[in-house]
Length: 234
Ligand SMILES: [Zn+2]
Image (cartoon, rainbow, N blue to C red; front, side, top):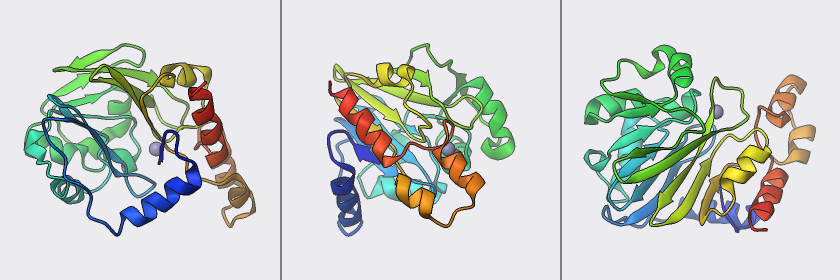
């Protein structure tokens, strides 16, 4: 996970040292963006504009998500919704559990919901969004847009937080022009880069898996992310 403007190498050091420190507590009534988990073991981001608090994806166990919110001073009962980017398990593992436990509406595209199958379980409140069409959850304005990934209808998002644009796009296969234009002018940008091209090519993965990670529907390399990051600031 790369915070915009921070080189990947430094960001990796920050991430490593962050494991050894207790994360700062967040004010539930203040705007905040907090990556609770990132990577193939699970993804979840907490986002608040100070009035509306959501999770973008919930890909760890429900207990883990609750614990990671709690050490930041956030109770799940303060949440207003869960927004889902795509159906991979590392993004939706506890969406259903938390939605049922805390009576949270789930915002998801109809294709992603269909592709999730039984993984979500029975949901009380579901709101379908369409990529390209903005929607609001209470005070929070959200714009979902299509990204390239091996999922049914994968989405990235931008949010209006205190008049500033915040972008979240994990699991990016390729930074298409659509992605670039959606993520331009973001004050805060959370994008995922999870492989070094040389390490991938020379590493132990079988060739088909290398192709998938490297391909248009796989994951953005650290180099691609660097280019995307630089482009965004032009
Ligand atoms: Zn995924």
